[in-house]
Structure formats: C-alpha cells, structure tokens
Length: 280
Ligand code: PAF
Image (cartoon, rainbow, N blue to C red; front, top):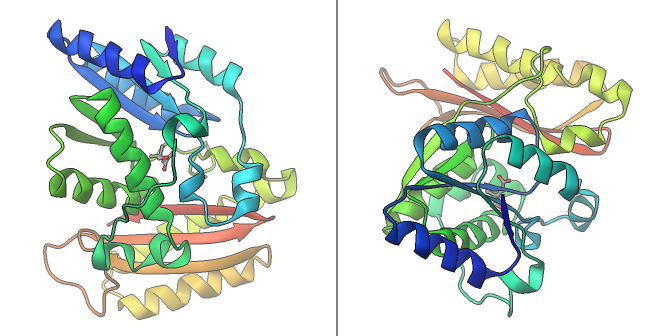
C-alpha cells in the first residue's frame, strides 16, 4: 500500500491511474477505523480498480476544541487495517498540507444545514464540505464511499456533488452496528465500560420510535416519547431527536404518503457525543 502525505503525491497517483484507465474509489475517513470503515473499503475494492483511503482529523469541522483534541488517533493500527482490507493508497496529510492558508470560501447549504448537526455544530458542514471538496479534487475518484450513520453529512455531500458538478458517484453504505445495536463510531472508544453498557439504549429508542412511525403515531408525539425514554436513562443528555423528511431533513408536522422518514438522534453520554439514525 502506498502512503502519501503530500497533495502532490496523491494528485500524481490519481492522474497516472486515470491515464491508465483505472477506476478509483475514495474512502475519506478521520481514522480510528472500525468495521464500518472497513466495509466501505471492501465495497470500494469490489467495485473499483484502486481504493484510495484518507485519514485526516479535519480541524475545521470541529466546533468543540476538546472533541478535536480527544479524537482518537491510531495511525499504525489504521494503516495495517487498510492494507489488509484491500486499500491501494493511503493519504495521510498534516494540517498544513490541507490548509496551507486559512480558507476564505464559505459553504451555505441552506435549510439542509439549518437542522440537527448543522444547527448544533455551527461551521461543521462548512468544514466537511471544504475538506471533502479538496479530497475530491486531489484523488479524482470515480466513486466516493460514505456511511449512512452520518445521515446529514451524506445529504450535504450529495448536494455538494450536484452543485459543484463533481464527476463522481456517491456510494452510501448502511450503518454497521455492534451485536447489541450500538452504531459503530470512532468515538465509542472513549466510552467508559459503564457508559458503553447503556449506549445501546440510543438504538433501542430509535427502533421504538420507528415502530411508532409505522403505526402512524404523530411526529411530535414520537419525538416526545423518545425524549422521555432517553431521560429515563439518566446518563444521556439528549441534544436533539428529530422526526424528519429523509430527503429535505426538515422536521415533519405530519407524514406524507410515499415519502421516507428519518429519525435522527444526538446525545451526550459520559462526555462523548453519539449520533445515530434510522430510516423508516
Ligand atoms: O465522516 C467523516 O469521517 C468526516 O466527516 C469526513 C467525511 C472524513 C470529512 O472529514
């Protein structure tokens, strides 16, 4: 597996492969890899000639300095996992390589980012869109792989690709879960054993809410029930629980026939911010 730390190396690799007619798959990550990331790499390896993964803990998408400082960093372990999963090239740049100067350009995704993660983490999606755009330009992938766990991020990246005419296909893989239902996340490593034991409640609440949506329980009632259930587990500090349209991400006052609904939650547990979602 090639390991590149400079933009020039990645650009040259992508150019050479494109000239040779090889199809490139890109898996952008922030490292501390788990089975969800490896599933993306394996999907890319099955569908593309070469898989490029990136590991970059992107400072511009963190609105909380502690979250950035404490974000797990495991470069040696990650490198071995990627090599074993069929990755051909790993891009692992430093901050100065990606941001030689502060960016001036600002992204505004309108209503799509005024809710949920965008509303609670100001500037987050500007940082995501900035780094994802840079990675798309450098790696020039034919396909780019993202996980459904970051549901709103996927919607933002889809909009980014459409608005800036990136010539690539977005591939979205389902959330990978632990045996007890907890969505895999790099942040799970920071949970204490006690917090880890209650963490699956988040998915249980989502599942109960999904059942209520299927039964036609009104969106506001589903939301209230979910907040109540999460409050019963005193360990959770719920940031939001939304019943939203799965395409526009706007909160629903009532259901519309034929339009999928997404249930999204963000909650703090043991000082760790967890998110999860279910599409109904
Ligand atoms: O989902 C992530 O890990 C990050 O937001 C991404 C897409 C790698 C951009 O930094």
